[in-house]
Length: 506
Ligand code: ACM
Ligand code: ZN
Image (cartoon, rainbow, N blue to C red):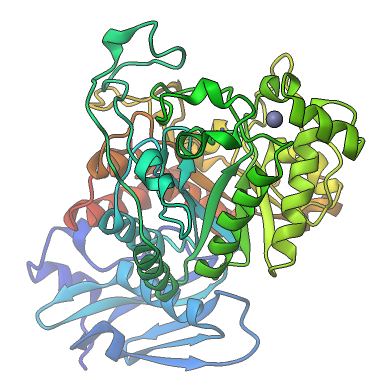
C-alpha cells in the first residue's frame, strides 16, 4: 500500500474535484476529525480495513482510524461494522483496482434507536425488487426500521394461510383513481375520475416475505409489519363481508376505489371478526421476527359501531360506555394478544386515546393537526404517560407531501414539505426531559395514493429521506442545514450515479 496526497489523487485526472475522496458523509458521523492526507489501498475496500469487535462501543456505533498506513475499525455489534463500512463507502474514491480514503478519526453512534422508513403498498404496490432496493438505500443512510404497510382499504397484500379470499377479493381493485386526480369520497359521484382498469391482484406470499425479511436482516433492518385494524379494513371486508357491522353494504366485494377514509370497519361486537384478526396476527407474529407489530388504529370512524346490534351488545357486556370505548377495548385486546406471543403492539396515535396500557407503543402522525372533533394525544403527553413513542408527524415526515420544487414532474398530496423542514425534524420537540427516553426515534412515511411506481417513489423519498436520516442519527448534534446541504449534494451525486431517481435539492 502506498500513500499519495489527496490533491495528487485528484490532479491525477481521476475525476472532477467533487468526485474525489472526501468526508461529505450523510448522515454526518457524530465525531469526525480530518487528519490530512489519504490512505491508498489496492483490492477491495472491505479487505483493506482491519475490523475488530470489542466491548464498550454503543449499539450500532463504531470507531474508525484512517492514517496513511492503514484503516482500522472497532465495533461492538454487526450493525456497527456495517455502518463503518457505509461511512467508508461514502469517503472512498476508486482508483484503478483499489482506492483512496481520507485520513480521519471517527467516533460514531446513533442518537435514536428507531430510524425508519414506512411504505404503503396497499394504495400502490411496488414488489419485492423495489422493496429490496429501498432496503439497500436505507442501509446506505444508516436507517434500520422498515415499516411495511401491507393492508388498507384499497388493497390487501399478503396471502394468509386459511383465508384464501383475502387475496382473491382483497388484492385486486376493479378500478382506481386516475393519475393526477384527487378523489376521496363516493366513487359513483365523479365517475370520470376513475380508470376502470383492474389493479392487481398484487400480493406477497409467505416465501416472498421471508425472503425480504432475510435480506433486510443482513442490512441491520428490522421489518415492522402493519396489519390495519379496526379501520382501514375495506379490502379484508371485500373478502369476508360477514366481519363488517353491515355486510349488506359490501355486496360488491371489492376494495375501496377512492382514496380517503372508509366508514365500514371491523365489527367490534363479532367474535368471529376478532378471531379472524387474531389468526392474521398470529401468522404475522410467526413470519416476522421483529418484536414489534403495528396494528394501525388510525382514522376509524365509529358510525357503523353505533348502529350495529353486535357492537352495542359488546359495549354493554364490556361496560365501555359507548362506541368511543370500543377502540380502546380493541387496542387493549390486541396489545394483550401480541404480548402473549412475545411481541409489542405499536399503533398510530389514535390508539392512545382512552384507557390503553403503557406497554403499547405509539406512532404520532397528527401532531399540529388538531381539528374539530379530533381527540388528540400529543407525543409529549403519551411519552409522559409511559408509552414508548415513534414520532412521525405529518408536517415533518410525510414524503407524499410536495417537495416545493420549481419544476416537479410528479403529483403529490396537497400539502408541502420542503427538504429544510425535514432536516429540522426533532423527535423530542416539546417532550419534557424526564420523558425523552421514551422517544425511540422517528421515520419518513411513504403514503402512495399518488405514487405510481418505483421511479416516482425514489424521487419523493430522496433527498428528503437523507435529511430525516441525519436528524435521527445526530439528534441535537446536527450541524445545521447549510452544512447538510453541501454533503447531501455530494451524496445525491452518488445516488444518481448508482441509478437512483433522486430529486434535486431545491
Ligand atoms: C395516517 O396518515 N393516517 C396514519
Ligand atoms: Zn358491529
